[in-house]
Image (tube, rainbow, N blue to C red; front, side):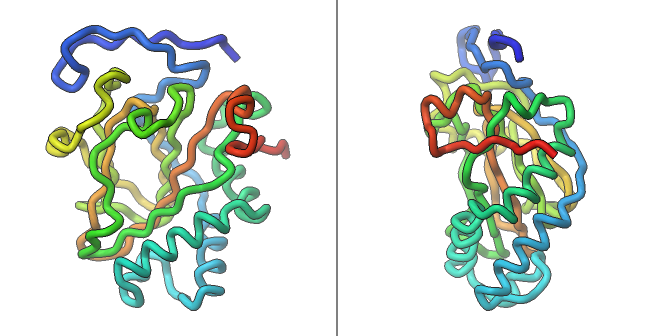
Length: 234
C-alpha cells in the first residue's frame, strides 16, 4: 500500500476560498463511486435480528409497524448487535465483493456497523449536511454506504461531489440545496471520503434501511485498538 495520497483541492464555492493540499492516506480517494453487490446475507441477518426483537416483515415495510422513536431504537439495536461474528462474516463478504482491488490484509473495518432506519414523516433520524471529518473522523478513513432497501426520491443519500477542505468542514446546514441525491437500489454501495458533504432526509413512501461503515489502513488500530477489526481472508 502506498505511503499516502496528497490531494490538492481547487478553489470553488463548495471548496472554500483557498486551495488546500491535504493527505488522505493510502486508500483510494473515491469521489462518490457506485458499486453493486449481493447483500442478501446482510438483509437476512438484519431481518433475523429484528424478528428476535418482535418485528417480522420486509425491511422496506417497517414503517407499517413502528414510529420514528422505535425506528431509532431498532437501528441502535442492530448497530450494537453488529459486533457479532455472523454479521461480520456477511459484511466482509460484501466489502470484498464491492472493492475487490483492495489488499484486505492491509485494511481494517470499523468494529461496529452503523444501521440507519428512516421512515416516512420521521423527524428524529434524518441527518443534516456534514462531513465525517468535521465530526471527528480521521482523513485516512473511507465511507462505505450500503443500501439494504431501495432509496429513491427523498430517501436517497444526498452527497456533494468534490472534496471540502478540513478547515471548512463545520457549519454546513446551508449546503443542503447543493447536495446531489444518489438514488440507489438494495445492494448498491456508495464509496466516498471524510471530506464529502452528505445528508439524509426522511423517505416519503417506504422505509429506508442502510448501513454505513468506515474502512481505514491497518495502522489505524494503533490509534484506536478496539475501534477496528481485520477483514479475515477466505
